Image (cartoon, rainbow, N blue to C red; front, side, top):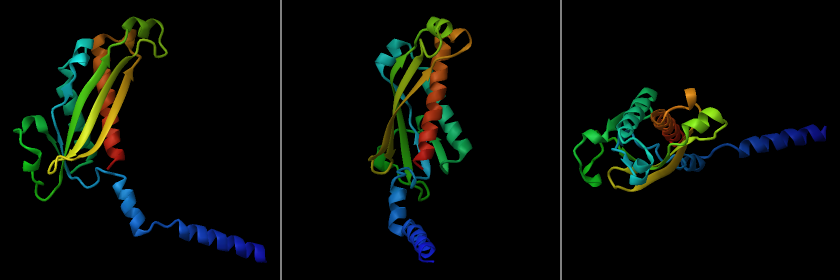
Length: 189
């Protein structure tokens, strides 16, 4: 009789001890640094000269930016997502919260690109000849200019019809990068 009572008591203590207190909820919220923002401004992405020299097509940058905006609008992650390329340049502290909504700035830089080898992708496969794209993303509070979160992402393209051309490699790595950053935003919101 005593053993079942002790088991029930231990289970009850465990369950009560694992309840989240208000202080723990605040810690959880701070673990999601993008949670307090309603408006996201996606600034024009930059490309390092080394990535251009390696073959990254600069024309892909506005396409990536537009796709990120489209995906975030579709998924309704923020109340409003704005293309920062179309806004006049201003100082970060000159951008007040829109209708009381705090703004967040997203900037991105293509840091590295390796086009890989179409022949290796086609003939060898299994990741040989993969195209690689690396980017750095930073989120800043629009009012203060303070960096809230930064992330480095890498995406590889290693398979395609007939190994995929250089243009296909650029496009596919950019598409993968868009998915990565959208997923990262969802995790941190």
